[in-house]
Amino acid sequence: MIDPALLRDQPELVKRSQESRGVPVETVDGALAADRARRAAITSFEELRAAQNAHGKKVAQAPKAEKAALVAEAKQLSEQVKAAQHLVTEAEDAATAAMSQIENIVLDGVPAGGEEDFITLRTHGEPPVFDFTPRDHLELGELLGAIDMERGTKVSGSRFYFLTGIGARLEIALMNLGLDRALQAGFTPIIPPTLVRPEVMQGTGFLGKHAAEVYHLDDQDLYLVGTSEVPLAGYHMGEILDLGRGPKRYAGWSTCYRSEAGSYGKDTRGIIRVHQFNKLEMFVYTTPEAAETEHLRLVELQERMLQDLGLSYRVIDVAAGDLGSSAARKYDVEAWVPTQDAYRELTSTSNCTTYQARRLDIRYRPAVEEGAAPAKTTPVATLNGTLATTRWIVALLETHQRADGSVAVPEVLRPYLGGLDVLEPVE
Image (cartoon, rainbow, N blue to C red; front, top):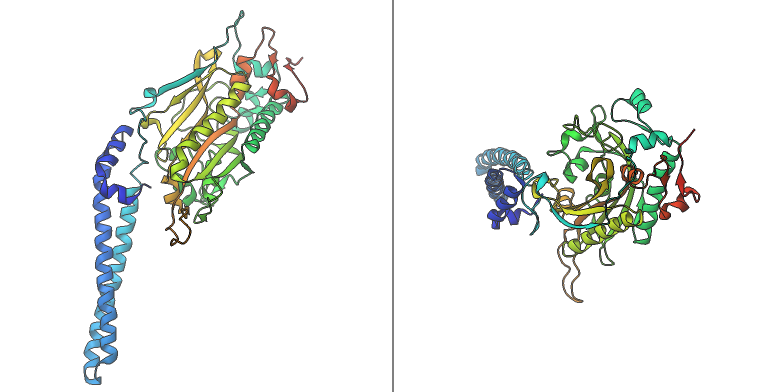
């Protein structure tokens, strides 16, 4: 959630942010009213508690003849305190619900609008030109014995697949390359659980407008994660972190699950939009002041990966209406997919400022000058970004294909494939 003080002190700023996202600004007025009701309920409760405590002392000191009447008054006060406490609970629940309708405040410069209103920041490389009719990634994957959609559908239904032979090796190679790069950049590798409790899924912001894309196990009340961002955000839930030696950086390797609700008819061919995939996700806890610099560092790591894999791409500044509720800014890196004659997202990286940390109660204690009193704890900033995922196979196969259906292996991947430099069609 956003800082309640910001809501009270700068409601117009919050309204502008909501408006740029395409969210009704009335949510801000509703949250302000709920916050006022919550504070009024707390004040009333505290006044009654004070009166109850004062009355208790009066009863203890009263003469025996007066005690019966005073005890009766005490009982009445006790009932009033209980009722006021109940009203506080109701008001706090209502305020939490109202505040949850306020999405993270977008940062200055983020374009307003929806999915098509992004700004292209830069492009890298020229889209490949072929002297033959290029095959799409699924046709190539079938020629190479790398992708088996037919059996994936037979076993699990639509949008499932098998990666077989060189396809399985290629994904593992990509993930290991990403992991090595993450280690070099100071990230701690983590293999997280892929089932999380509701409070973790809610805290990261995935039970808002994207809730329909999340798988839920009703009997256990657990959620399957669509990214290891979720368990990594929950990793330090309820903790006070020591950021005195710099940010905490993690690289989570996990299987991810998405129902892709609302995407029927889109990208039904191949492995672009599927229900299950693997991903290496970077996740960072840092100070709010360092968050924007850290964000650019994550983008740099992503771009370096795509450059070394020989992929043409563009970096876009995602419009406010296309951001997740937790993101204050998101950059997508989209690779050129030749047979679609279009750029398609391979990575994204989001600066969530303190939004997730407030919901998950993750704080740090700012440094102070020697001899000064310790500073109050304050929410950390969180960031996330993809460093490798199954979808990259799409751009790799199509970009580096040859007329005979073989695919050249980028030099950077060859050590992870036993020195293999060309993927050859199977017999």
